[in-house]
Amino acid sequence: EMINRFSHFVFNSDYQKEEFCNKFDFKGRNISVIKNSIIPIEMKQKKYDGKVNLIYHTTPHRGLELLSHCFPKISAENDKVHLKVFSSLKIYGWDEKDKVFELLYKKLKDMKNVEYFSNVSNEEIRDELINSHIFAYPNIWPESSCLAAIEAMSAKNLLVLPNLAALKETGSKSKFLYDFTDNVTEHINTFQKQLNLAIEYVQKQSEDYKSHLSELKEYADKNHNLDEYLKKWEQVLLSK
Image (cartoon, rainbow, N blue to C red; front, side):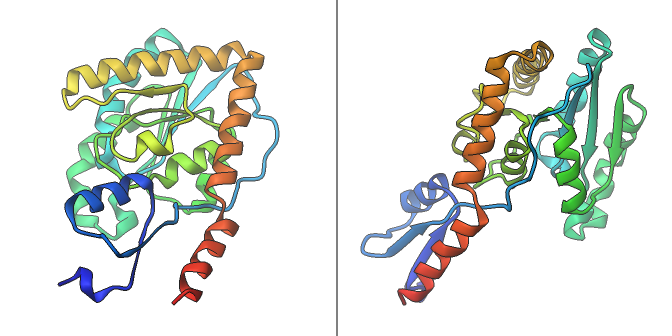
């Protein structure tokens, strides 16, 4: 009955479209995929002064706990690695639900080489992404897309994330995309290994590294560009 109330269905990723089409009968329906998009981040060369900056800039329930387990070991082995966390459910107005994560936030605040911040504006995040090198994202929450990863790519950040749900699609260009497992210990170990490889990749500053950053940015800016996004929506709306 719900399906019959709509004349056109728009999905934000191929993954989301496939999930819905596998569950519901969309035969004969008008369907489009218009992927989540951003205003590309203006920047040129990624700066590096010997310090590798990691960033986590999404809500805490998506894998922040796993990152908090990995980082102390990474920091103990390499004092040149720093992490900034921008995470809170307050961004959704869920102040009460955010209290569940207060111990995690305190743990991060007390951690060496870590700066924790609550939710900040998107403008501030985009500025931070210009100065960071790796989007560290051991995600455990199935997503239909991932704007955080898209903006990270646009700012020439490496992506270290699992192929869970739509991340396999959004992060398809990443050299550090790994197989997801719901075994927490295995996930932590795999993520930590991939993150160490990404850190070494930044530190080497090879031509291959610089080429990969350009590939990530070009992919994000071309396939998730807000101008093209608006054009596609206009086409859908004008066709009715």
